[in-house]
Length: 193
Image 1: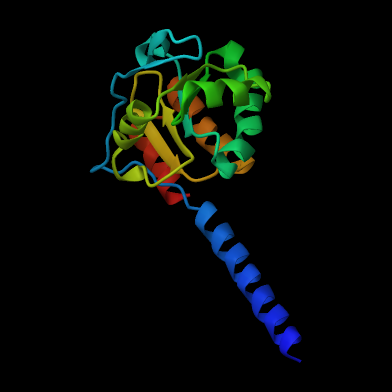
Image 2 (image 1 turned 180 degrees about the vertical axis):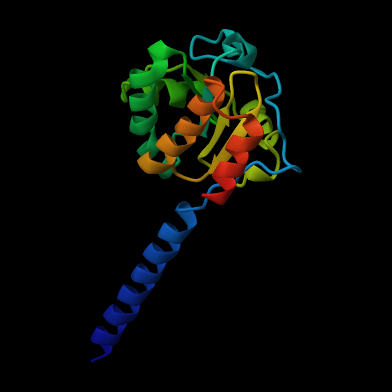
């Protein structure tokens, strides 16, 4: 009888842990508000060949900047989705950029095994500071910023991206890039929907 109690308590603890983990990693989006950072600040981080790369190299293009780390399970799960976006839309101007909050050796080894072809920058402390520059939106990894071609931040998503959310955010970026909507209108639509 005592063994059954121990097994039952262990099962309850495991289920509670799984529920808490799922709740934590399914964080809702953090939308840009009037008090949040509204423009992308220039930053420079090394790429995997250790060449310094300024984010301004990609100015004039819609950007999805994804902050991640090799040890972050939700980050690894969303990378194929970001690679698909890069494959589908990279030739039309949209640029996905990964920013790893990790060391070069771990990032290089990880990227080599994943087939990721979009640019990846890295830095431990420096990349963390860049993520923090997005204000209160940075509560952990993954973190993705959606930037209009003019450098205005349309939205910041904290937590793992799902396909429907990614395409909704990219749709608003497209509307801004084509002149159908202003950045303010896109921000409002994303905060209401």
